[in-house]
Image 1: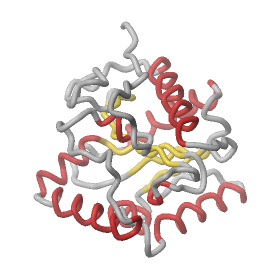
Image 2: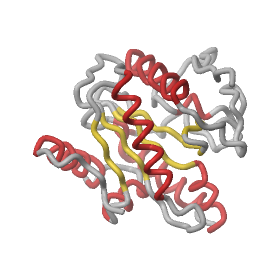
Image 3: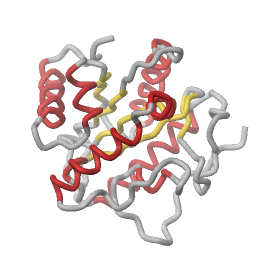
Length: 225
């Protein structure tokens, strides 16, 4: 399925900005490059990450995305939520807004948590669940200290947790991981210090891209069903 972008000229321009950001020579993520080249990204533009209506639309779009995905295959896709009207002056303000938005998405999500991962954000087996499927979420914004995450606009990238398992099954996970980290180091001089393999530490520390403090606690809490 091709990238799903609103038909207006402004959103086409936003699509172009993301393509330029990902496909330039310095961007370290080879998986992101491949997905954009093959048009296996699904980019949607939303008014405001603090607005309930926008987040309700995002949940609807994620459910549509989940419904079209071939979970029996070995393909790779990403869902990208862009919020061009939001602006943050620093990493902490983005991080707070991101977790508030994720909490709201969870509150309006009517599906059970994906049973293949933990729902405890302190657990190393945690992964965020929406629409009954586990996602690894990448937060990006222009003020990020990590160049690889300095997207044109505040952004949430939703990658199925299953896709990392697929890379492991194919025997390519470590090669892909090491190449991305090597590219990131070449770009910025260091790899992102928060990066850990799944199961080594809670992945919540990686979502915003900020190097969180040692005593940082994820603000997310699972609702009572």
